[in-house]
Length: 419
Image (cartoon, rainbow, N blue to C red; front, side, top):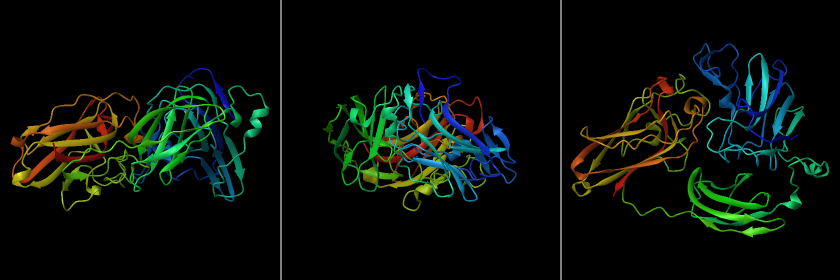
């Protein structure tokens, strides 16, 4: 199948949706995270709380586009699957780490392929042919192969379809990212988007439409290099790319990794599949003590009206009492949420100002990927002391809606280093 559009649709969601009998197909993707049977909506019309207190939402069924080649719903010896092989996402928007709804179950079982939406939207829609994509019925509950031959489209005179022999590629080396992280390559322009993961320091792109592209490289999901490249029909262009080296720093402490993901922090292992008020969540806020705590002790999100604050306790030698720089990486902000900083109960960091607004719920619907703002403050030596010190990190933002719908942000990592 494929879908051709010439403009944005109203109300702003372009999707394939199959509604099927839940009695035959009771299990959704990442079941039961999007099964709202017997549960009551408590945030908007899409986020539900069940009698046992657990939370459900169709957004919790999502996976990153770069990983979401096959998803489906299953029953007894039966499965129905959406398959997004090849260039199925090339005219969608959002990039390799974008996530959107896959399934929801209530009175019926719903199976989706979201092509475009306004959910945590970071770029304009692309227009033209979406796909090809496929829907497959099997007698197994195991996902089928994501390899689907759609080359027959080239003989059907389908508007917007570009066959393989009218495309080109990019290949080369991708270096400078530690093997502890994924190296992800991403190409995009106004008409198309593509991505791949490097292996062993090299990569080969998917077949791409001819044109000029912005090219980015990520350490997991943290931008480390950017360039441009032009693709021509029938050719493979060589393009080497290397991560911009991190400045040499004398670090006092670092919590987490600057990789564009919050998963190593407290509740980061749960946030994709449940609401921050879910009883399975650990208590938000808390204290992190340098030298004895782990990243799991520092919250992956802080809010202006929920979640409390996070205190970092650390010690300095007399030679370390000098100007230090505090760096806080974030992955997503909601309702103007950004960090506040208070050192030793006396010195406060300047308000960095509201980040660029993404007008879409994120944290409460399992989203974590936004602009990736990084903030820094220079802490004067006069605010520090030999021996025990503390930094309290909180949040400021709009409180129009309250709770976790007030201003909040998601933490990537935190570092204090010698300026």
